[in-house]
Length: 109
Length: 113
Image (tube, rainbow over the protein chains, first blue to last red):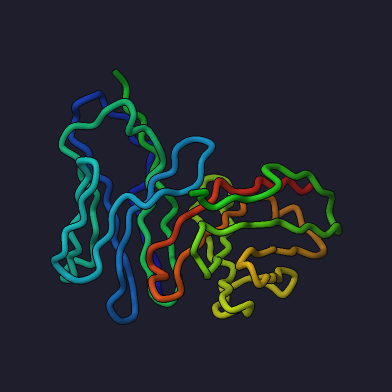
């Protein structure tokens, strides 16, 4: 079947720290992979995506690389800001979307 | 250009009742998907509509049903509400030919007492 496993949170970092949120997936075939972000009280927003192996998605300083050999799509950012505080969801698309459970990130000044 | 809108924003119901949630897709979009997001969990796919028909369905009972109108807006109906139906219900819209690029609405928070 299809599923996504995400690093559990919550994660608390100081401003300008390096961020990694781990995501691994199980899928039939070759899915597209996504990171979504959910700010408090809001719906999900697409952060970045990758559609095939070795693709790198990037947006707003965040990056993730589609690793077929390790079935992973880890989210990274070199220097987080307070405004990055949110819940981050890893997802795959294979006829329908499958989401991970989310990782809450809090960045403190 | 309006994004995805949902109504109502919040709703309180009691067990056994029925509820209807509404969604207007982003301008130009013809496909609507519905998700249930329980507290502390990721969204779970309920179903997807385009051309006024249900096209894909997730692992949800028949108590969950939907409809899409000719203007592409959509409704989610839940019958015989259970306490476990309490969740944030999200609507997402997309183009049929680019379903992987979906835009989410802010959601409807349903509380079942």
